[in-house]
Length: 385
Image 1: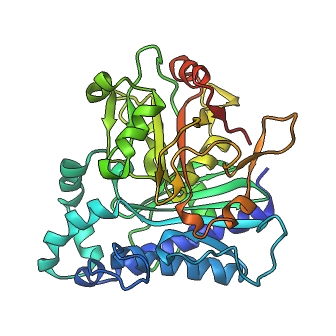
Image 2: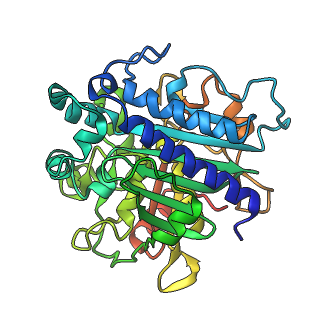
């Protein structure tokens, strides 16, 4: 059931994402690609911080005590404040990736800055989407740069919003279902929860033949940071098979879950998507899809399953484990006799910067015997809310 308070938070997230788009699109391109002056985040561009400021502003106007975990704000821990919280952490908090695929967006937008104009002028050029797909993969509905916002209430993911700036589409995951809608072209036209649910189409997560469908999408860049080594240690793919099993190696974070939906071409189905020791903002939105996506052929059964990989030995980035064991995981069992978990705000607030929490997560269609046999063989833990 989609309760009133959950609807209210979901509506605020939709408004926040739309406001981020409106603000970013109204920004001159020369200003958007300039380095930001955010303290302790030297690689941040203005197009990272512009939507982030808009999102946090909307969420805090909706809830003055809102805890928003977002990387662009640097090292400050939003849980550590004098605002009312529970002793075991905030009852409700949001995790946000304000501008995902920023490296690719910078490569794409910088050469266009000489043309002048605003971001909206560049993105609405008739050739823009085709040029993007040529350089950074298709379909743009999945591969475009996005913002992702997820709300966690009482330890459960209650709603996620993914807004694609490039294609001007929005995806909503909540208790009412998974919806995908085109945004109004008129930027002055605000949208709400009802707009997405009425104008959008329900996303389907197919269950292809998983004896043969074994393609994987995962981030495997930056060897100096350990991503290729961490992926190899998961053992879903043998090293000698990587070239033909890895469908795409530099995908976006929040939108990666959409590779398992019917937005992905049927002639190239994906067998699993993996968060390869990545930060929390990259994959938190997946959790809401896992919780609420149902099979088209059986509305009583989940369409997706997610497993948390952990091992006795793990790599780390900046002192943060890429594959935390259950003792260090933010997923905590509700009681010793149950396999159901909740997301622990208390675990997050123990970090100097919660946005840097990392994990290795494996998602696949629920019918996949191939993926299930592997994660069970290696003893990975299923995340069940």
